[in-house]
Image 1 (cartoon, rainbow, N blue to C red):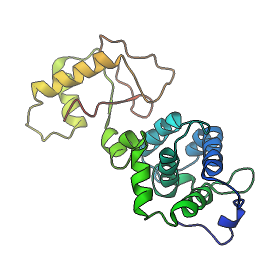
Image 2: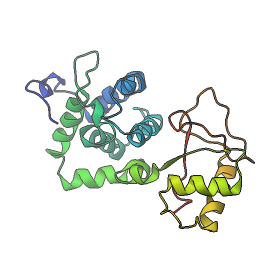
Image 3: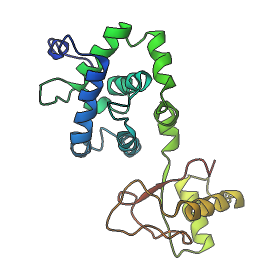
Image 4: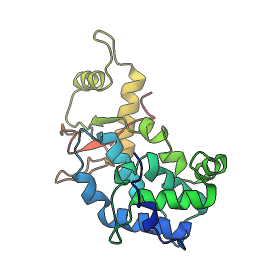
Length: 219
């Protein structure tokens, strides 16, 4: 992926990194969720989509953003969670990728610059969304309720691809149960289905409608 001839020149030469970040921030806040729905599912996997939406909610507002977090977001546009928007244009005809490249080039000359790498990794967002952290966090499973222990063990075995004949260990079962209780049904997507109550495990719901992140309690 790269810019076309003339794309970079559309960014005003007097723009600062903050101006470029603001352009990216405002477009994503206004159009990000809507445009993401139009991207075919075979192009972007669900874990990527969910991580992007979580990042979108965490974006620092322009008047409070640090230089390191601007650099982090510029990198996300160029090659990570916001890359899908690289060729998207705002109302001024400027591409998200052009904003990102312009800002990076003005300060660091190129994205491979070691100072740029160190800067973006200082951003608080890097701990959660820096690759491969977002991918490691995005292990999803269906939520269940009114299900026997044996049935739940079978479901866990299927979700985690445990070899046939191998038992689901008690510590894994306990971890899943504890997570559901502590989470109180915290989910990525809200639909017409109610939240899962704290003391229950799980109504059988299609993962496309209601999914929950359980990485960290089952490994």
